[in-house]
Length: 244
Image (cartoon, rainbow, N blue to C red; front, side, top):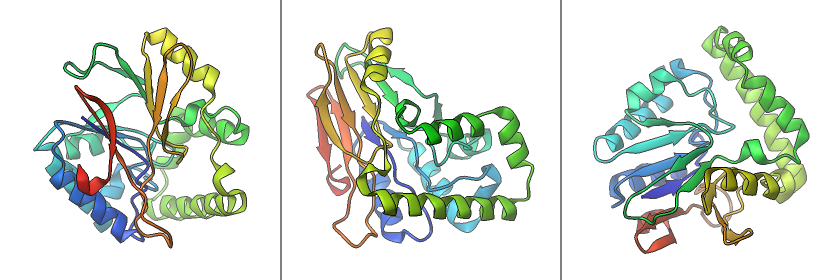
C-alpha cells in the first residue's frame, strides 16, 4: 500500500503532473492512498469540464480500474465532491480516518492531511473553520465557474507571497499533543500525514511514531521533490516515484 500527498497538480507544473501519471501507471502497490492536496486548487466538481482537470480525473479513473485508490481532501482541494468521486471511482476518505490493513501489521494506523492539527497557525485555523461550513461552500459554489477560478487565483497568489516571505516556516507543524491525543483515542501507534512539506519519520512518545509525507515538485529550480511511503508486511519504506 502506497501513501502520497501534496502533489498540488496544476497546469503550470507539467513535469510534476507527468511524474504523478507515470507513477500511477507503474506502481506495484495493491492500493494508493492520497492524503490531500492532490490539486493546487479545486473550485468545485464542475471544474472537471476544463481540459487540465478532465485529464487528471481520467488518469485517476484509469488508476482506479487497476487497484483501489483512496483520496482525502486537503486544504487546497477541500471542495472535492460526490461527482469527482463518482467520475474517478476513488474512495472518499474522511479526515482523520483509522486504517486497518491485514498483512501490514496488527496495529491500526491513523491517517490525516494534517492541516486541522497545525494549531499554531491561528489565522489559517480561522479561515479553515469558515470555508468548511456548508453555508460558505454553498455560497461559493453558487458563483459562476470563471468567478470561482479568479477568486482561487487571488488566494493562491496571496499564499505564494506568504510562503516566499516566510520560507520553510510558512507551514506550521502538527501540534504534538493533539496528534498524541488522537493516537490514544483510536489506539493507534502510527500517524501518517502530509501538509507540512517536511518529510521524515519521528518518534513521538510511548512508542508512537509519525511519518510525514513529502510534497511533489518536479518543476522548481532545485532538485525534484517527491516520495512514496510504502507500507508492507516488512514495515514502512520511502521510495522515489520511479522506484515504486
